[in-house]
Amino acid sequence: MSAWRSSPSPQFGGRATVPGDKSISHRALILSAMAEGESRIRGLLTSEDVMATAKAVEALGARIEGNGSEWRVEGGPWTSPEDPLDCGNSGTSARLLMGAAAGVEGLRATFTGDASLSRRPMHRITEPLSRMGARFDGADHLPITLHGQRLGGIDHVGRVASAQVKTALLFAGLRSKGPVRIVEPVPSRDHGEVMLLQFGVEVDAEPCPEGWCVRLGNQRSLRPTDIHVPGDPSSAAFLWAAAAIIHGASVTTPGVCINAGRTGFLEAIERMGARVEIDAERIQSGEPVADVTVSHDRLEPIHLAPDQVPSTIDEIPLLACVASFADGESHLEGLGELRHKESDRLGAVAAGLTANGVSVFPEADALRILGRGKVRGGGMVLAHGDHRIAMAFLTLGLGARQPVTLDDGRSIAVSFPGFAEVMRSLGAQLEELE
Ligand code: S3P
Image (cartoon, rainbow, N blue to C red; front, top):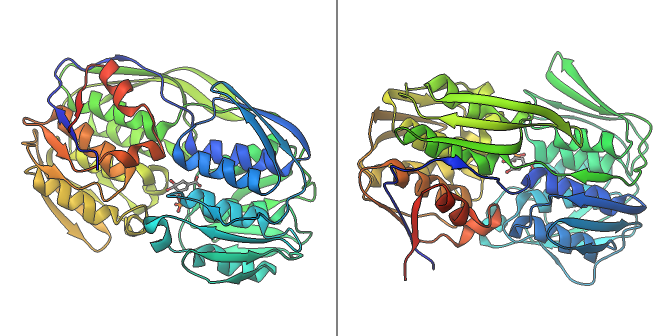
C-alpha cells in the first residue's frame, strides 16, 4: 500500500505538460505492430497500461525499440505467443488486442489480467468477434483463450457507445474481407478511425437512423507511418479541475488532444463557470491539439445528460468532485457504464464524497450532488485500486478545507506516471505517507 495526503493548496497555478494520450498510445502500438515495416512513435505514454500492450505485441511478433522520446516498431505477421498475454489492469489492451488478433488463422493466445480486469465484462467483445468467425474458450471474464480464424464481415449495432468495442471490431475487420459496419447510439472517441486513416486504411463515419455509423472501406492493408501522440486530456483534466476549484488559480497545459470525443469534461466545467481558453489549435497525426488554459471562477451546478457521457466517460469521478464545489444541486445522468470500469466508479465516488462531507445521492445509473460552494474534506478515501478515483480525490483535497487521505495511490502509474511531480510543480501540496 502507498497512502497519500493532499492538502489545501491556495498557491496553485502555472504551466505544465502532461504525458501522451493513453487511448492513442495503445492504438499506435497495435497498428504499428500489424503494419509490415517500421513505424515510429513520438510522445508515447509509458504508463503501466500502455506497457502491457507493448509487451503483448512483442510477444505476438513485433519488434520494439524505444527510449523516452521515440519508439520504433517493426510490424509484421503475428504468431501465437509462448505465454499468456498479461493485460494487467488494462481493458483497452485486452479488448483491442483480441480484435487485432482474431483474424490471424491458427493463432492461439490466452489473455489474462489483474483481479479488477478479470471482473470486467468481455462478452461485449467476444460475442461480435464470434459472429465474425473467431473462437474463444471462455466468454465474459478473463482468462480467455482466443483461437484466430478466417473472419467474415460484421454489422454490429451497439446498445452503448464504446470506443473499445468499435475499435476492436475495426481492427478485426482489417484482417477480414466482408463488409464491416459498426453503429453506436452516439459517437464514442474516434482515435481508432483517425489512426487507421494515418496508416492508409479507408474508413468513414456518418450519422444514420440508428445513431452513428462507422464503415471500413476495401483498402484495409496498413502502411507503416510515424505517429506523434498528443497530450492526454484525461490526465490534463486533473490540472484543469484543480484550477477550477482553487480561488485565483489558472493553469495552462500545452499540446493536449482536443478531439470532440474527449472534450466533455472541459465543456462541462466551462458551462459551470470556469474560464476556458483554447489557443494555438493545430492538427498532429490527424488529431486536433491545442494549448488549453483553465482559470477559476464561481461554479454553478451542472446537469449532464446521457448523450454527454461518452465524451466525459473517464472524467465523471472528477466532474463529481468539481460539482461538490458548486453552489447547488448537480445531476449527472446515464452513468451505468461506470459500474464496469476499473472499479464500480459510482459506488467509489459516492463513498469518497460522503467521507469528505459532501451530500451525494447515488441512483442506479445517476448521481445527485448537493454542492455548498466549499468542501469540508478531512476524509479517508478508498481508491479501490482505480487510478481515476485516486487522482480525482487527491485533486479534491487541493481545494478542500482540510486534507484528504487516500489509502493507496499505486494505481496512478496505470495512466499518469509523474502525476504527483506535475501537480507539485504547480504548487499542489501532495505527500506520500509512510
Ligand atoms: C477507451 C474507451 C473507453 C474509456 C477507456 C479507454 C479506449 O472505454 O473509458 O478508458 O481507448 O477506447 P469504453 O469503450 O468501455 O467506453
